[in-house]
Length: 385
Image (cartoon, rainbow, N blue to C red; front, top):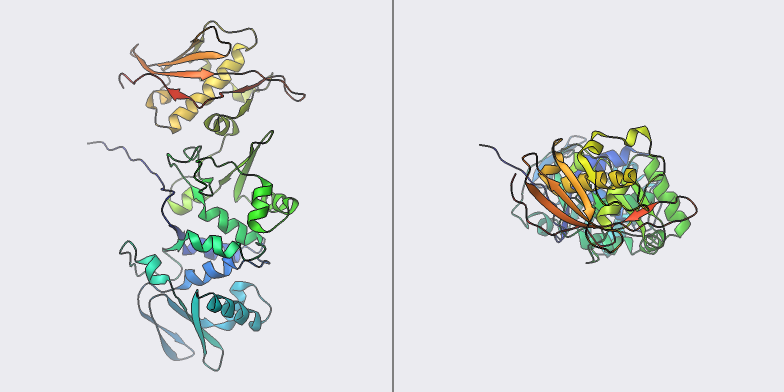
C-alpha cells in the first residue's frame, strides 16, 4: 500500500520549535555579531540549557540537583556563551531577565556558579504533554512567539537577534501564507498572508536604520543563512531561510526561484529577450501556444508556462511532473493578455484548466515584463490522474 505524505507548518501555533543544536551552532559562529539591546539571543540561549526532567550535575566534586526548567553552570561558561569580557556583564543580563519576570537565579559556589530557572518553562513545554529527557546538546524546546516581540521591542537588535527573529517567523508550506509552498519564507503573522516586507519595516521592528538593516541582511545572505528576493517598485522583498528544512524537518533544502515566487505572489516576472541556453528545457516541446499575440513572443510564453508548471508542482498538481503532459495555451477572449492554460494528461483527457493573465510592460532595463495580475485560479475540475 502506498502513502502520500504532506508536510505543513501551522502559522497560528503560539510557540516555535527550536533545536538546541541549532543554537549551539550559532554560538560558535563568531561572524554573527551579538552587540545589541534586545537580549533575544541571550534569553533563547538560556532556554536552550533548561532541563526537561530533574537531573543531577557534578561540578568540582559537588553534585547539584537541577529541576525542570533549571540549569546550573559557571559564570565563566555563561560569559563565553554570551561573548562578554567580564562576569559582571553576565550578572547584568541575568538581573534584567529577573526584573522582567523571565527567570529567577542565584549565585552559588562562592559566587562562581549560577543556577537559573526559566519561569514559564513548564507552561510552554508541557502544553502538548511534551516531556522528553533529551541531552543538553540535542532535542528541541518550544519558545513562545510573544516573547520574541517583547524582547526585540526593548532595544536595538544585533545581527544574532535579527536572525533569530527571522528564524522564529519562518513558515513552510502553509496554505494561509503565499509563496510558503516554494520554501521556508519569513512571515510576521500580520493576518494578510503576504510575506512581502521592506527594509524600512524591518528597521522599525529591529530599532535600526534602513541602511543598517540592508547591511545586516546582506551579511547574513553572504554567510549562506538566508536569501533576500527584492522586487521592483513598492512591492518590497521576500526573505527565505537556508538550512531551515534540514534543521527543522531533516529534509533537503530547496533552491528558490525568483520567477516562481513572483508568480505565486502575483508580481512582475522578468523575461530576458535572449534566454540563456540553461533556460531551454525539454518542456518547450510539451507547450503548444495558439492564437499568440505579436506582443508576446512564443519563447517568452514558453518561459512563463514553464515557471507556472513548477509552481503547480509545488501546489500538488501531479500532472506537471510528467514529461508526457501537454500544455495548451490559447486566448481566452478578445481581452488582450487573457489566456486559457489547459494541462492535458498523457491519455488525452484534460486534467486542469487555469485562467492566466499576461500583461506586457516596458522599462529601461528590459523590454519584456510579464505578470499574472490576479493569482492563478483553478477554473475547472481535475478529471483523472
